[in-house]
Structures are given as structure tokens and as C-alpha cells.
Length: 489
Image 1 (cartoon, rainbow, N blue to C red):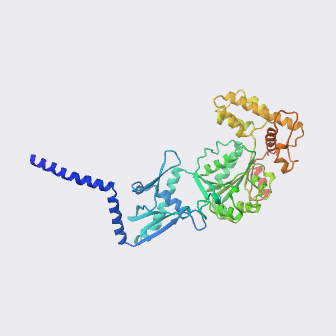
Image 2: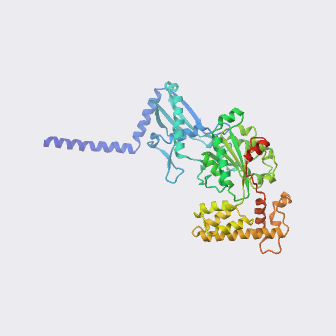
Image 3: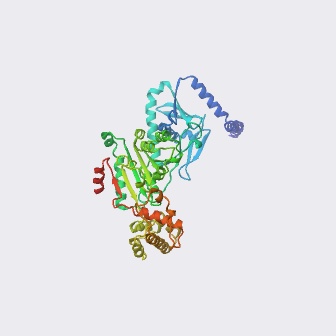
């Protein structure tokens, strides 16, 4: 027994250096090189077919298959065990995303067939994944494998519920001549339709319209129309138009494309940008009235109209287009005609009903002893933007009473400014030209201690408030009579 024990000990002692050597070889990647050599020998024994999946087409449209493959590959266990993998932060701070490194293939297996993926290096416009599959397996495996990729990637995206924000780049910002024009980042805006301060009945109508749109693909096709919807959000600054556009994207779970017209070179460039957007997206153009009033030499009115509902706008479906304006009456009515804009939503300055919603959201107040005083001031005609009142409440959120008193003071100042303007003959509606209305700093008052700039702000607020409509939403079907009918309903 002692002899056999000593023999085992000697055997282990002799094996330890060999184990140490194998571990050292692994650490120095010699085993990896040996595995690569074996794969190379195997490749020479089989005929392979290669499929290249570029990120962009020759017209710089994004290839949706590339995006699906990227999502799918990040979930592969073989990527996690790869000898070289890139790590990126995800949408949430604690998320880590794996990305395939160029020239480092990753193996996969489907229906007992070995497959391999490589990430082809190159500039942003030349990025591509390359799938390698045995020729004898391609007819049996390729189509089911691609369907498998779509299914897995869709499941992953639904779990992540990730919405992305795309911003257009101008020529000077592009990473390379002819490169992609959109830069994207995760869209984490917290706004929802429920948190937007808005008339509850109007909010319900808009929400129902969006839900109806999602289910209407066959209906639109039966009518011979492109499956898209366009909204015009108009009202004074700070009334929640941008937040509502963000809430629409979150509600639909669509990516959002923020079109900055000042970065667009010409009409053709604007069309090219639209062609690079994807289905299931919200396309937003903010402050369109201000851009048109500047009479840009880069993008013409005709170019804007073509972008809104021209032939190019029909080159993609399941899109929602959102345009925001401060005053829709200042621009050519061709821009807002029925058929070009499907839904008009007016965002007025804050009234008492909206104020109560803000107090509930920002301060957690359903009722307060100062509410009757606030209501009385609103009934006297005082108005502020929801953004203004919201900032007051944020600054004083530790003391709801102080917050309400500060709001009352701001409303009283607004009301006093209204009275001073009225006494000095300031025209509040319609009699001024567009140029005069755009220059409110030219309004003077000798008897007031307010500065000219303060009167400018007050005049702008009053002008917007004076144009409020009883009917805030107009669902148009393309005919004026249809518009009136739906407004009455």
C-alpha cells in the first residue's frame, strides 16, 4: 500500500509541470493560435459561401438587417467567450453590451450547421457583417437562420424597450464624404402622454388617434394611401410641445428623428435625409414657422412641402411626422392645409385646470387653501406658460405654500402688465404686421417701471393667449368639410 501511494505521488509530481506548461500555453494564446490553425485546415476541406450585410445601402439608407444581426450577435454565448470582444455601456448605467471586434470571427451553430460571423472593418459608410456558411448547408439553413435572427432580435428589442434619438449632421460634421447623415443616441426622455399637462379630453382624443393609427395599415392600403400620420403642435413657447413630441415617441415605442433644418444644405439634401429614416419612427421638425419666416436660401418652401407630403415622403411607412410652431397663422396656409397636416393640436398658456395638474405633478397637491385665490387670478385673465409655472414649483418644491405664493405673484405681475399694455393702446390681436409682431421690444410705456424687454415678453405671451381656440384639435381627413365634422364630434 505504501508503494502504491508513493507511486501516485510521484506520478502527480511528474504531471504538475505538464499542467503548468499547458496553463502557460493557454495564457500565451498558443492554444488559440492552434485552434485557429485547425479552423484554417478545416476551411480548406470545405467550400464556403460568404454573405455581406452592409450597414448602409448605396443610397445611404440604413440596412435594417444589419441592425437585427448586431442585436442578435450581442446575445451569442460564443461572443462572451471570444478571445477579444468590445464592451460598451448600454441604455441604463449598469448595462454592459458586447460588440464583435473587427477581424475576430465568432462561431454560431444552427440546425447542426456551423456558421461564422466577422465584423468587416472600414469607415462608417463601409461597416458590414460577413456571414460564412458551408455551401452544402446554405439552401437548408440560410432562410431559416435569417428568420431565427429576426425573431431573436425582436424579442431582445422588446425586452429592452429601447428608443433611439437620431440627429442630422451637416457636411462639416460628417465622419467622411458620403457618410451617414444621422447620429443616434439612446432616447431616455422621461415624458409620457400621462405626464404632459394638457386638457384631459383633448389628451384622450390624441391618444385614441395614435392607437387607431397603429392598427390601420390595411385600411390605409385599401385607400391607396401611405401609412403615415402628421401632427401640428402649435402654441406659445413653454407650453409643452416638445415634451409632447417626446411622449408620442415613447408611447408608440418608435425611434425619433430630430430634423434640424439649419443643417440642411438644400432641398435635395432634405430629401436624402428623409430617405435615410426608418419605418416605425417619429420625425420631428421644431419651430417650423420661425424657419419659414427667415426665408432661408438653403431650403425653399417648395422643399419643405415636398418633405411633408411629396413623393419622397411616400418612400417609407409606419411613420408619424410632428411639426411644432409658435403661431401657425403667420405662415403660408399651404403648409397646414388638410391632407398635409392630419391633426392640429393647440397648446395654450396655462389656465386654472392646467395649473391644478401641475400642482398635482410637481407638488403633490390635490387641494390647497390658496387654490381659490389662484383661480380668481386666472379668471381675471392672467396667464403664464406651464414651463414658467413648473420652474417656480421645482424651485420651491420643499414648501408648497411658498411655491403657490410665488406663482400668485408671477400671475399678478402678468395681469398688471396686461393692463398697462391695454391702457397705452398696444394692439393685442391681428392689427400689427408680421414684422412688427416679431419685434415686441418696440412696445414702450412711460408710466411703468418695467423694462422694455419685460414688456416684450408680456406682449408675446398676450398675443399667443389671445389666439386660443375653443376647439383645440382638428382631425382632418383631407377635406375641409370632414375637418369640421370631426371637430364637432
